[in-house]
Image (cartoon, rainbow, N blue to C red):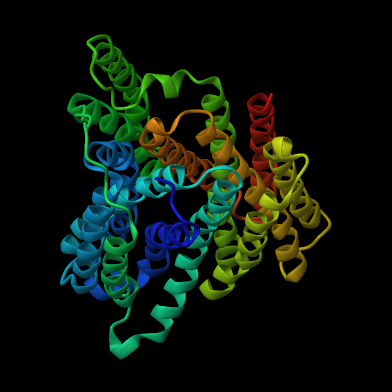
Length: 455
């Protein structure tokens, strides 16, 4: 049965609100770190776990969350993830000590991992053609805007110190929103259809989760600790873990079972090219978000609020792609390549501005907007091309793979860019310039992959 336009709008609003909440909490704890450490008398390492614990649980369980959406139904899994996320947010806001807060953040990340893959699954199930392109435009805004909103919201709420609660409102604000969203989701999201449900491949869950864990933990923690031996050991061990996962998936498929990731998805050349292009471009965005905050705060001694608002122009330009793309009649096919190239031009213009002696101000933010528009165009059209390259029966598989790909690419980008910037931090302008040069190269690689996709 076709979903009516009014119902589609309500469905999209519910799904994207969940996505936006999850993305806010990816970034909001970065701003709150010093306040949390002082209030709970916690070490820097413990505070780091508050930030990284959420990201680790989120990244490790994304594909599992997507497969649960196929096994239990995307509506059921979305509500389950939202419930876990909201309850964990309450536990975070009321945490009496650092141990409780760290555990609650892990659980919060797990809830987000159940909820987030259902967003893209829902879009694939209820939107087609230009309506899907428009929906993906808003989806991309939720992805990009959530990260920036997390920084801005974190700075504003902590500075406000509501009723003397310090950092706690950054988590407690999720509770009323989560409850209202759960009520709306029950009314708006269509019931999951009855019928055969795929069994969850538990061995695949174990081996893939181990693989992602061996990659994500050293990328998150190794770079800030100078890449100790254990971080390299984890990265090396991730290769045999990945091989074991692939072996198990092949055996499951050979026996007629349902692998954790459908083989038809991984064999699709369009999906592979699209994932490479999307990983390169989204990875550069998260790297820029992290390094620009270091540049403005540590290098130029600007405040957290200034740093957060610096990316507002980027997000605003990013959002322009959503309403523009569905109105185009020609050249839509090549938009993934054009978006990647425009993103590279944005990074190149900022690099030229630095080389000419500029350091901050409105012109810098305007040039960032060029990159934001390029990322918005590339992100919308790449995800649209990836999700259109297979049938709807693989919606859950694509949702998990696309989300995990972006998360790992973003974490890798932050680790590499952060390490590069730290090594050159005595000259902030030069450090940012070197990072931008690397981002340009990655974006051009993404453009090449996007060209393969459209051909």
